[in-house]
Image (cartoon, rainbow, N blue to C red; front, side, top):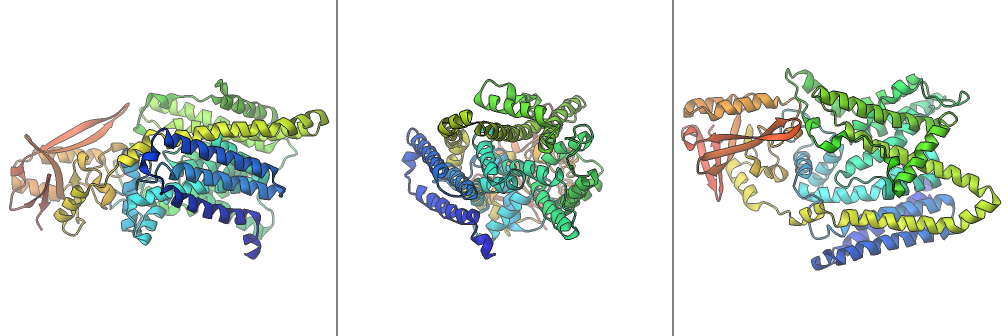
Length: 593
């Protein structure tokens, strides 16, 4: 342990952690007036400039290559924390506030903050169906710290921004070596791919590629104990990535069909097909607490409705050939693609990356076919994996080119003279783009405008008495923010694309249609207590001149969705069966015991 703590990487990690914490505390003192243009832009540009100056100092530092690599990664991690912390310094919310996917994510954190059980955030009798690891950890952090779930998401955002470079570097080190792994982490983060909307997906993608190369595409040790530890470590890491985002495994699985076609040189030592399967089985075993209960719930359901991939946008048909874009990024990725085509026969790493490239394109083709069958698989996500794969290939190509140039006195002298200046200029350009692309984007404005719905939460708590109903609540879509601040079992989700596949949404909506047309109070109460999926015990509907409205949405592929409106009258909620509770503008009907 002492040897590990004395290593350069751990020392720099500890120092950069303290510096990131100091920056977080320091930016909180920036006045809100200086978080608008042009002040915010200037702050972010200054941060990018300081970051590149630090890279220059690291370049000139008289340290070992390992130490310099750690310093570069530490500088990147601190820079990302600054980019996130500054624009969010005067809000408790993560980017996006409580709109769209952010609302759905916050609801999951609130659920896991309330209970460590593996359950869906809307239907408490079903297990989680979205990869839950990130939300589970934040939910338990909220429970442990006593912080509100919506506040914890912001801290998770900051923590991921700091850890992403370190973890990326750590997984690329066995594949490319410490120095090259640091360059890979820097280039991929600054220039190739960023997903501020879903940082846990960003992290999973950055970890998946080196994990696949290092554990699936590499020969395991032959010694028995080392082999066991190999499968144990790789399986645990693969399971963690899978529980952050499983989609990459589906795309990369296509490479198992290509392994016999795209092989490297005969004298290479590729892993056996059986070893690849054993590693994937180890990852499946360790991730079974997630997919096991989910699979069981699907097998026990006669009407499975997988609606998540039926979210549609014309851009989802995009077939990505990023190396044809006439930009610096495009030229860089073109270099990577050319390197793959030229080296796959002689370098196992190039062959593995080329298989991943082809798998992405095949997955997109499969997606086109399934769209025609009305079964979309959101194949466009293959383009995200493709960017990282080609970006990694481009980095490896640059390393090889530099080795050849530095070995030639004439060209080596030119590279040593002009290379650092050109590299730092490009780093500054991409650092500016990254900082401004996040810091002045619309999700930041949305986060600042988000506000805690005090009246809505107080009204619900008064209506529910104990703060939680035994059955489900029927909540109008205008009040869906309630799920963020109060763990709540709802009868139907406000958005079909977040709906659990085993929830039988169509059946629930049909039952609601029948319920809304039942005029007799006694029959209405009996139906509400015997609804498919469980009883409805609390109604939070929107009062209108025509009656009480429940508005929700149903699947309407290829459109996003269509609105469903159910109208209830006060006479349906007979006094013998329901208690009417009005708190300000909110009206609840609670079923009597």
